[in-house]
Image (cartoon, rainbow, N blue to C red; front, side, top):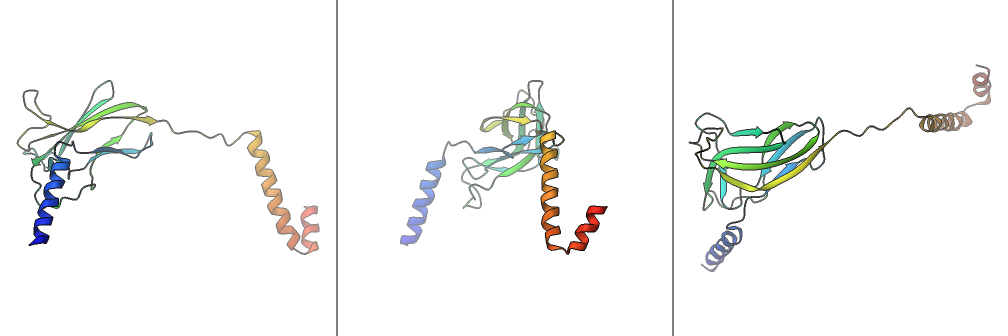
Length: 181
């Protein structure tokens, strides 16, 4: 009986601590370059628990981007309290692909809407914000010049060093024949 009361008390404390906390959102990977697929994820285990389900159109998410690189993603699903199937694993993110983005600075907001709501969400219908606005940047890949005089000189020295160390171990006849060539 004591274990049951303790478990219920800890469960209540858990819900009180996370109540009103917006679900955590994150962009993956941390350093984004052109050609890298970008994902946004959210933690469905925080209050309110969000169970993503396809809407009546069969869509799970809808992504809109404007000319200022502001991205809005709407996820179809139910907000639940308390979470069904408790304990809900906190920290197990659910991810959605944003695709490959060109170079630029972006901001993203994530929303969720009821599965009975069409995607894109009409302006007169309500959708709830998940997390906060996230700002991130997509970088161009860095180009390292490999054909300058300094790197060519280092390459020649490295080849000579390796060749000389190999030839020191070989008989003198091979060394003489290589010098003649």
